[in-house]
Amino acid sequence: MEKVYAFENLKDIDNIDFNKEKVLSIIEKLKLENNHLRKTKKYGLVWEDQVEEAEEILKNNYPVLTEVKEKELCRGESDIINLIIEGDNLYALNTLLFTHGMNDKKQINIIIDPPYNTGNKDFIYNDNYVNGEDTYKHSKWISFMNKRLRLARELLSSDGAIFISIDDNEQSQLKMLCDDIFGSDNFINCISVKTKSASGASGGGEDKKLKKNIEYLLIYCKSREKCKLNAVYKEQSLMNLIRERREEGKQYDYRQVLIDEGTKKYMCTIKDGTSEDIKIFKHEGYVMKSISEIIEEEKLSESEIYSKYFSKICSSTNSQSSIRKRVIKGTNDYRGLISIEYVPKTGKNKSKLTTKYYINSRIVIWLSDVAYRKNNKIYKKEKLGTLWDDVSWNGISSEGGVTFSSGKKPLKFIKRIVSMCDSNGIFIDFFAGSGTLGQAILEMNREDNGKRQFILSNIGRETPESDLNICENITYRRIRNNITGYINSHDTYIKGIGGNLKYYKVDFIPKNQSRDALKIKLADRCVELLCIKENCFNLYKVGYQYSIFNNNDLVMVICQSFIDFSIINNIEEDLKCFNSCEKILYILSLNYEISEFEFQELSAIGIKIKPIPQKIMEVYEEALKSW
Image (cartoon, rainbow, N blue to C red; front, side, top):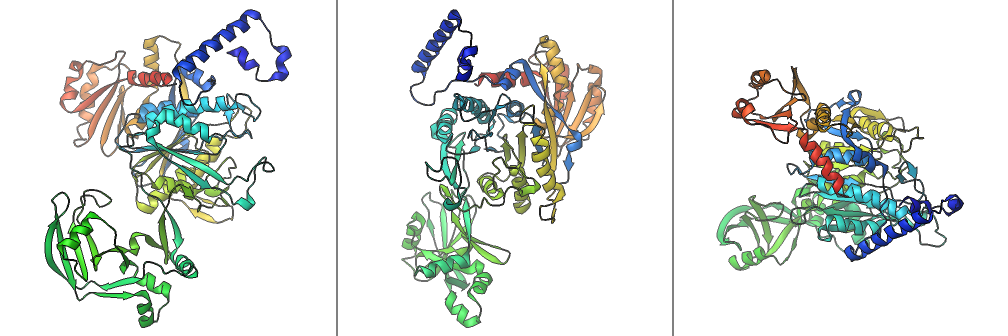
């Protein structure tokens, strides 16, 4: 296809060698490709695949990771080790396929903000910026994303999701590409995200088009049946909300206070839809008052009353639930306050003993379920749909103590996405930019005691001519700032959050050597990959021909060279003090498997024997086939 690419820039047409045989050969290839597409592609996205230099490098080399020890940060009490990988994300994704692929121990989610392909130096392909006049700009971008998203899908856990920010330059193409890769059945939502006010929006060609003030967030999962995302909410000051309702001539719903629930007495037991017990109690002598009554009695302001009685403020609804109908029937439509105790089969209280209240046969709903207190103020939570218009994009350029103008996302926006996922999950961003995801994870773990881990991947220098190493000087710097503390742009010291971080660079092992020599070399360079795979980083001991790493749950022994079987007793002795831990021995083998007989002494004491590096090579070779 080289001659076809030569036609991209018509200004160079005089320099093209129009060899008749070559031109006819190219035309014939195009005909064959066109016929193939017509037969195989009935509906969907069709593009001219563009060869990428990174792809060629992976065909001829195996990627490995080398730790940059001087960038390690250990400022956290937890055992969570966060990672930054410097290098083209196609390389990083390959290494992560070995370390995290096919792993359902934890929920793995991906949050990315790829280049939007605007033509304004935001998308680099083969070390060159793709400009707006490039004939193949869409094909290059789709080829670029196709390779990475196919690997990303394999990284997701079965219950994980991928969140992709994009604007209208490539939104339609990306949607079709994701439908093809993840399956249209696994499409969850396309969120419209307000980024600017219409009056202040800017952008090219606005004399011919409407002003642009939104972007999009595409959400896909790996398995619709297993992926359960949390609802997300926007917050508004409760007092402001009440004021707005009054200006509209409406009352706020939550204006009753259950001062005292009285004496609880057993009434009866009924059955739910699965014949499980629902116990019903009546409350005698309960006290319910309105907000206005209490204001009059206690001579306090409305905001003071809402704050004082926050956990007791309620409303009621006649929601047509099956349980409510059973309760009304079982109590003969009792007038007054009753409560029920039961164990739900689904929902947030699944398998937990739950209490619900009814007043005059209406379900009692609590303000504390839809609002929260922060800094002595109450904020109402409103469940969000597919329009997010409440996140400010002003003043974000210096968030995290670094200045980054290439599409930086607000911290609040990324936190909202993270909140949709498991608080103990792994979060990957292979277009890490300024590292907003990393800061979001650090802050959220501190706020809710979560156990989230982040893995960020970013290129070093955008082009060979670039002076700035983005991964080192932007991504890493922001994470270091937030872990250790920094002075912001207003000369104010921001205290560090704490946390742990390891920094790696991608390196390569050439394939142009004998298979055995390649395996020996790869085994010698795979320690970092194995430590990441097993989440086991503490070097406990370096013995003759082996190293021992451990964490709270695992002991890992790595033999990177051919083992001298006389050291098996040494390994066994070293592992005696780890009685309650899982034990793994990784050992160099030139074969696909190892002889269990040779290691029966270790197997007998519960040590799992795993050969290296065959599995690593298989993962890398399979990745090449994915595109």
